[in-house]
Length: 269
Ligand code: ATR
Image (cartoon, rainbow, N blue to C red; front, side):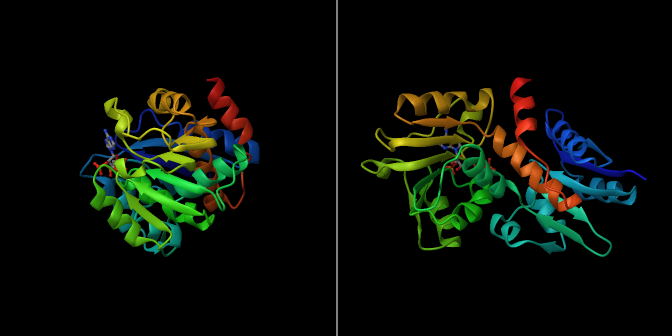
């Protein structure tokens, strides 16, 4: 019997995950079915249980259910614990395995696809919500020289920094003035409201990477602005999307899919 997987969310109709996993499966010769699963906002657990009872083997979890998925999982990886959220569920015989592959996807995209080293570089993470927390552990595991979290609401950045180690500094946007960074990652939801994080001038070091965790039109304003402000290289989060999916696929199937052709196909579309 064919193994069933899905991406669960609300909304979920625009998710590219079915396309991505179908391409991975074809490339790896794995016989799986992957679909979208819309859960009612108050019906995450019921929808997951029904999917599992019908033989579902695993789920990707997207907004707004990643924290609920964390609570549903009975076994957590360290990176799921540090994210406080789960984006990958695997239904094993006696347990529900929960992991978070977002940070690994981001790091892999920056390191492998963009060829940028995070180790010993100065990293600036914009935002202190769920998206930022989800990637902090894997970013720190790369051993940056220092990592600064800038947020509009300073206390949220401070709470997040406290969660991690002493190499993490919390900052307001104004306090960034006079500092430069090699890697600047936008993990805010500002662009959803057509806004920009209020970065002071001069934060981009020569050749710095500006990375937006969103992709396509949602990331365009931040990245255009970053280029105008002196970033040497800009990238949207499409590569992160593909890489976090590859990591999920590996957790389910034990095979690591190739990502370059999938990323190229998505870009072409
Ligand atoms: P997510 O799960 O996407 O991270 P979230 O937890 O609501 O969503 O967090 C959104 C993040 O985007 C926060 O860091 C938020 O800043 P505040 O904590 O100060 O609210 C940030 N954000 C949203 N709109 C912003 C804007 N216009 N300018 C700067 N930061 C913004």
